[in-house]
Image (cartoon, rainbow, N blue to C red; front, side, top):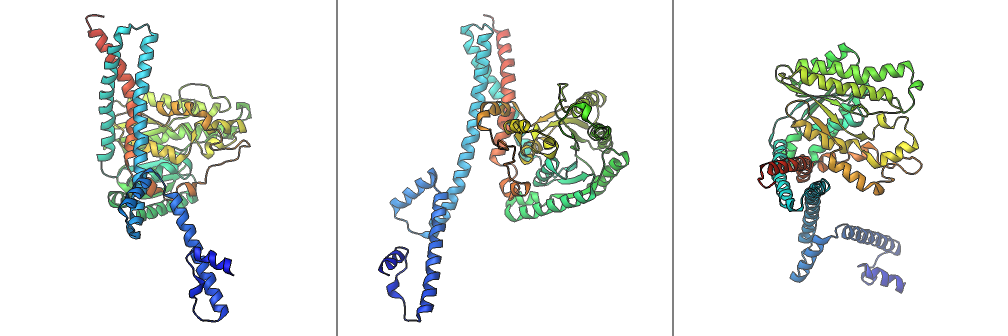
Length: 482
């Protein structure tokens, strides 16, 4: 009994002050007090472990010197410091990416000039050209970032094949920007389920967002209609429905596609080939034609989704799929020449390899081990593509997820990516979609600083490298001593 009293006293419970009452009541109340105190200590220990960090430790030290004991003040400051830590490390990460981008372009230029037999005395020219590329590239990337931030007003967006996978992730990202979205798929039931799910996402987002983000999200609207992109009448009904709901279409994304697995051509049935070609190629042709028709007056942008084989490279085990994507690239080239004076921009969007049913259907264990290195989740890809789709200009642009910095990062960190999505037996390790998008609006407040820096570094990388080379040749050609 004495030992128990000592243990309870350590947790703030003193048996010696118990009032006179029946032993049963006293025991029950003591048990409740003990359990409550132990639970409180456990929560306090978890919070303490969770909120340890350099900024929090510094503030705790300052509070210790000042002798502050205000519990409410300390609790509020803990939350503020935790938020400050999150922002601080995001800024440091993005700034690190920027510095790495600048330094890598400088190293590449220097090595390139040296390997080409450059005179060591031309080092000054190399660094001046690098500096010129940084200045001009920074201006170009900053302009794109400011356009994304300043260009107000919701876009009216049509996305085919948007009841699952990347299509639904794209729709969710557009809604987060306050846009109006039409989802479309063959199945009326899938369309209705997706609409209800996205509406619930919007409601949940409105509860956690504040200020401008909340005002923007409140403008979001999602509707849908069943559509088989292989049927001209269905495609026409889709465009008429979009015009009836929103009055115009600003962005049309041909995302509907199918693959039917990885296997030799001789193992594909007639139905498989017909469905792949009809959906991927004929469907994109019909939808592009209809989108150009409805956008003819006010203008707009059409995106066809790129894929393996679009550049004419071989796609063993997916020959049918690859041939349709190659056909879409030819369509892109033809329409650029055909509609030079049109107000409609025809573009491609390349998501890379995305963990969707389209990719995983029929994939082997070896395929999944490769997916660990280069695949991404639909939400991750959509988060990158949508801001760039919203501010695209002109025609013939390629909106790619796998930019040079991302490819370089994937190659450098390949050994760390093993077992990222699948284990050695091919079992999926990533969370289900419902868990991945929990608190999606809170975690994806539109146009955060990290988004700006991400767009900035990605666009600057190509600009700096190419413009540095241009500046170098200009300096060399204008130098009288060369």
